[in-house]
Image (tube, rainbow, N blue to C red):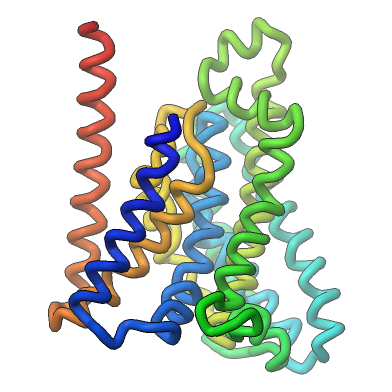
Length: 311
């Protein structure tokens, strides 16, 4: 377990070292850019991981992030810093509401999560376009600086601190309370969990609510990192969040995984295009790397399960 826990940090360290070799000028500014670019994806990975651990999957994450992005950019455009902080609570509430809606749809319809969340994703995408038809809006400079600054020093960018605090805020209730036990139980073996007195529907609904909160944080982080709202901004994050959790060690069958791996995987997925630019390679090749990594990780997991069954 200790080796598995150290694998992802070690992989990130190796990737950073190789990037430094490829581009000797790689320094504090690049670390800030990396953290800033990875922040929304890390929170999206957090949102996806919670749902997948509970035994589901959420294909509406990108649309939820887009709603939080355009909602925050629209409401905060002419607001003060203090007002923007209060409006952030409204955005978080809307995120929890969207997550709850997903949970209710999945629980009551009894159709697969893939179909249910794909449907709500289309609806949420339309809502994002209704809120803000084209890219625009904004937020006060002090609000943007929450993520874009480097108040803790050049090598500890604000985005990295916000990333850690955001993930902890969502993940702490899972790890430090009975909520986590029922979510893991529901994802690991829903039949056994039900026989043990766990309300599987409630467990998965709670997971979707927490996921919605993480999506709201990701959407506001996107506002901080880009300075505007864009109704189509979330499209990238749905599949990339799945990539991050797979690479980060979360089992797609549910009941296994944590949060450190997906967050570090989000940083790796953000670092890959940067490294390709330094090497003079088309950064779009990063999608090929991302897809290849998913295939390799899934194949490796399947091989491990096969080996265990043989033993």
